[in-house]
Length: 255
Picture (cartoon, rainbow, N blue to C red):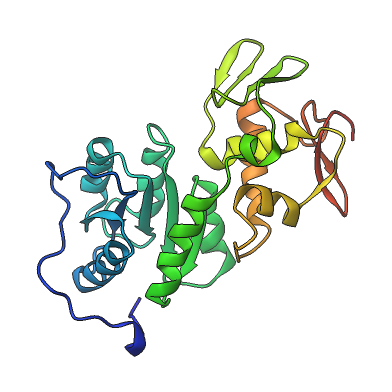
């Protein structure tokens, strides 16, 4: 992903690299995982000028270890890393972190986007891309309204043996805890807050990603699929999330 001429910057000094012992600040933290060092420096510089605390890594295995220590709010993750690729890095991140993941792919084919989303990425951006757009995407992820605040709900929502504790951001089925990513929880909470309402994909995007989000609306389908799988819900005979053909999704059973 090469920055356009209007997006190029002179890099004053050294960009912080992926090493343990980073000075923590109150700024939102971003881990940039990109094996092309010049590009990683440009991405990091733009993000730091936007006020983020940034570290970089060019190696997938190192990035996973850094994420455990740095605890980033957002990971900007190249899909095409050598060795441990972006898909596997994302899978491993999802075993211990609920950070937002912005996946970068050098190919525009839908399969590349879906592969990234299928392992828990929250958004994707196709190379080459404007650095300003990349920064904006990170900012949009961090501005995403927490569903319970935006919808004005709190407390505990129950649907049979499914319990959604909005304030604690916890979900359980028949007393068994269910681990959801931030995006997955926010989608479930948005549906649960208004169980009689049929949500279109766009309405769910506005509630979870925010109205300024731009991208393929089928990202909703991918994440709904994740939520269903983790809840043990069957799309053909749903207990919790119902597909309303031609419209969208709602809470409740039925076919």
